[in-house]
Image 1 (tube, one colour):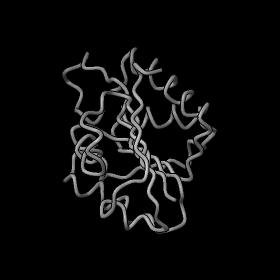
Image 2: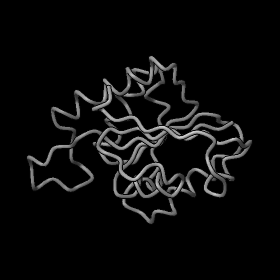
Image 3: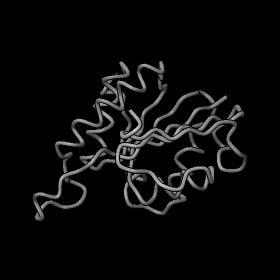
Length: 162
């Protein structure tokens, strides 16, 4: 069994229009929602074997906040450029290249790409609000099967649910 968590970054700030998109930080709501979502996942005893994040400030900050709540070492977060502003198939490639070893993987990134990928994996998910977590369980031994078979279980968590 493989478990994939797609996590859309928490709400970001647009206060400084001179900042490049990649450098936008979290706003106050984002800094409140991210720890809450991390605590919610921790209560469910979520223990990722691997966390990958977009290099964008808002995504990486969300990943770091959630990782801390899950007792995952921040230094072990892997930044992958393909999780920021690339072709939607690149996200699927990131997943399919994970091999067999990790059982639970979290990806932190952006919309519309994450909502598109979530919907592609399961039509049960149509939207991903900020700081939403889409959880997919696949009955497989290898990540290379993701996207070619239906997930055994699908769940969407949003900050409003908590």
